[in-house]
Image 1: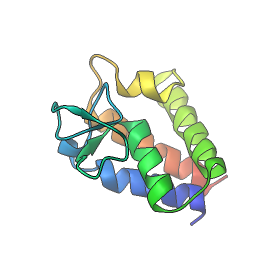
Image 2: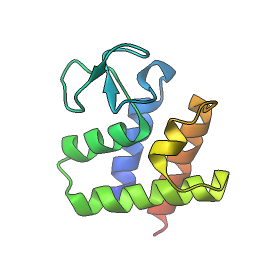
Image 3: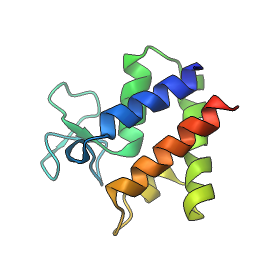
Image 4: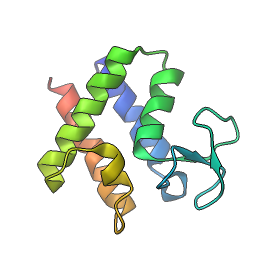
Length: 114
């Protein structure tokens, strides 16, 4: 597995439990709880982009891997939902956790075959 796919697999694991996904903030104390700084050790849930940045940091990957993974997320969003902005997608009013996870899985597949 390449490094980008490994980061996206980490995002998938991090957000797999619905209670660990949030909207309108990179990180929170709990779902619907107060916003925290992205790298706050008390954070228990993250948005799609926040989870990506945490995984890049924890896996000690560089900005190039983050950019490539971000491109794959945006590509998957565009392919599946006709949009290509991860923040707007994640924070969409009627967005469902299952849709976010579908995007992460597709982005990982795209990264594995790149």
